[in-house]
Length: 480
Image 1 (cartoon, rainbow, N blue to C red):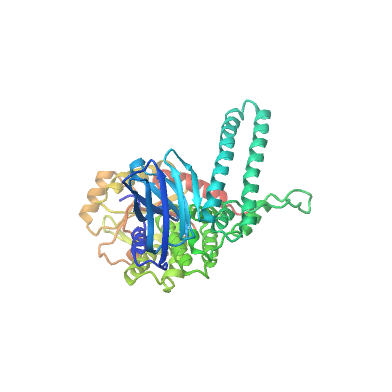
Image 2: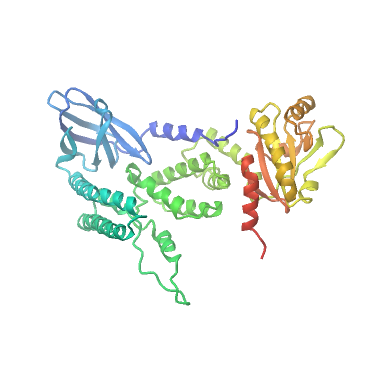
């Protein structure tokens, strides 16, 4: 295997958790749907759960296009969807807050909905319709602006001013809803949408504008209008994007910054167990699946702070064991750590070698673990050998390759078949070398880059990226 996906079982864990006993109390519902153009068929009632759409229930329409959702249901407040499989799964959205109301619409135009008995849905549908009309004005202006930006900059500026006016109209419309209906669930939803308004940018002591002020202000006030105490916001199409945009757009990409932001987000859910649970699961899963170098440090932090101390009450023992196992595999070789010691016999079994001897000899060292039975190793190791001979060696970069196999005959055949006989090739004939417990060798090849101080600066890096990575690393870490 070339790629590794840490703890994908977390995904199935989320699904299983949703199918377990509902944490929401039963309520009596009496919701009527009247849809012109629908007869004698079943529709699906779906709901948002983060960035997913899941099934909550279903209703059956009679010959008159009427369906009812009645009786005791474990449905929490949130944004729901009425989905029609017969119409290629077209749907319209509605809000469950009140438990008794009627919605009337037509398959010819789901944007026109008559609402009876629900202020939430009345405000929601009216706002959605107004927003749709304004967006219809914005879209062609934006398209025209983008098409002429390079050829007619003056007209593009005028078009941009028109777009800003319409966008301001959108904001004013929604601000008026929040002011008029502060207790509506829908008001909470639209309050989350926009980033905070940035005040006038102050000048620094030298008279220049503080270019970092806007980003820092937004970062500090980003969650001002998000009620983390209301777990029902998870069941909206807005909450997931709001949270993860903070990590993607307003957090520096270094692992330590991401860790700080994750802790901040989780801390805001201290008054809502369901919100706390959701955020812990989503964040752990995000960094479990990430293929970005260094994100395993974020994963280890989340696991050790929230899961392994048993603060994640929803995780059973088997789940915690798997999480702990992954942390044990990852942690010794996190970027920034000193490289765990490696010793091994050379392929001719003449003498034992130590990684220290190589690391302190070169400015950087590439350490590659491989398996003679691994197809990716057969492809990558000759590439690495050629890169080292043709490019890296002249830049005082060393190379050590270590076979994880104990079978010397297999190792020699691999070396001959891949033409890597002129590089360092070590192995552990006993199968008990301590380094086997410090490196994650579940997937090979495992390639690391080590600096002269024996610290890991990269791992699981593609062969083609090694030279570029070291060159750019040196630029960013030059001593003044």
